[in-house]
Figure 1 (tube, rainbow, N blue to C red):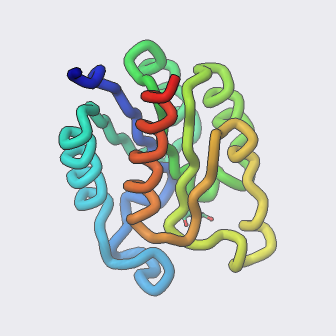
Figure 2 (tube, rainbow, N blue to C red; figure 1 turned 90 degrees about the horizontal axis):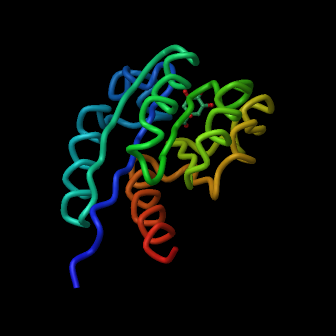
Length: 150
Ligand code: DQA
């Protein structure tokens, strides 16, 4: 039986465009382009189309969630620092009502106190933090599993 082609929207928030050069001891040396290329390929291998976007602006992330709400079956989001205060992003994820997984490269729970709270997590099915780029691939596998078990 052929699997239904699923569509996954991947959103990266502020400063993630600098991955590879930004605090590599915390965020690693892998660039965002490398992560996105591999996500698209891994998606293809698993029968899914993956579209990736990055913005430093909360409103743009909200706009993409709205714009792709009919296209996307599921969402993977690393909100960057918006994790900790981006209430309109929380509301947009809730509004589009797609299974979403929040991803963080670093373990936000072992860092500064203000990073330990996510205002996005309550709008998501799950959160993966601290596994570096692997977190995105685990999220992809998981969101496809959730969608295929519906
Ligand atoms: C991050 C963690 C956030 O606290 C931080 O502001 C980021 C990246 C992560 O992937 O570990 O920009 O989301």
